[in-house]
Length: 325
Image (cartoon, rainbow, N blue to C red; front, side):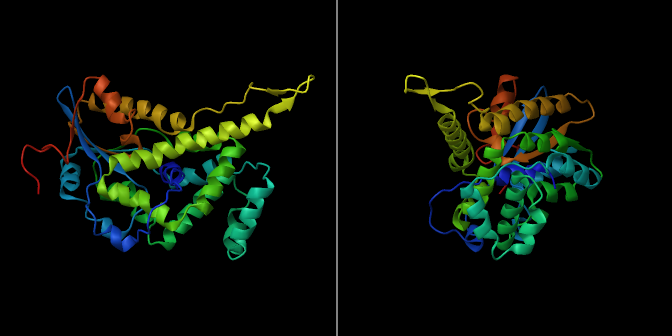
């Protein structure tokens, strides 16, 4: 199971909104983010995906299907390799961390009616447990990794070349590098987040609602990072010899979650796209990445703009020299 499914599910937020059903999502505008990138006469179509889905996502909108048909190669975050998943999960997904009373109580309550499922995931790291809980909950709503956008496009790619911008191991290693506190926080969110809030991210993706996607994905990561820093500072606060409170700041600030999960990887992905476009055998690329990499001020497009690219939003400008309806 690729990390692209994992980390995007961990970005689902607790966000108050009226209930949004899977059926109602099918009735709203279907305009997921699609951009055309031109660098030195070469073209890449950059498409933002989510890594879960359902059958009625397909076919994708005509603009997306046309861009996909024009491509000489498909580019994804990480190519799946079933043979390497188990060894990688054993390497990166089995580390145990102390659990506090609050999380233990929450997990015990959650598992009361799911004893068999919880027993199956208990020996894995908290981030793995959080992923599995989120996937199971999405599955109960009719959404699964089987119909994930990137997975579906890889199945449809045929004999065209398939490239990756990262590796599965690098992505799993990143998740495994997070502290126990962050991982248990992921698990808490996977249980606490309401059905409506989980579906809100899917709805925003379908509509191509960039401001809402930015709020849901980047906003939550920033908030989570600040909450974790405050918790660490509280734990590092001690009483000094004069009875005053002294904050021990050494090793107290975790790396920014948003920087690690999005911004740094946006730089890497943009560089990978540029390198592939320098390949003389590739004229047009179709690049599919998690939609979080296409929103916010430090998205992939902004990095490519600094490298001299010209960029079109295919829902606002003509990306095919003819009108697509």
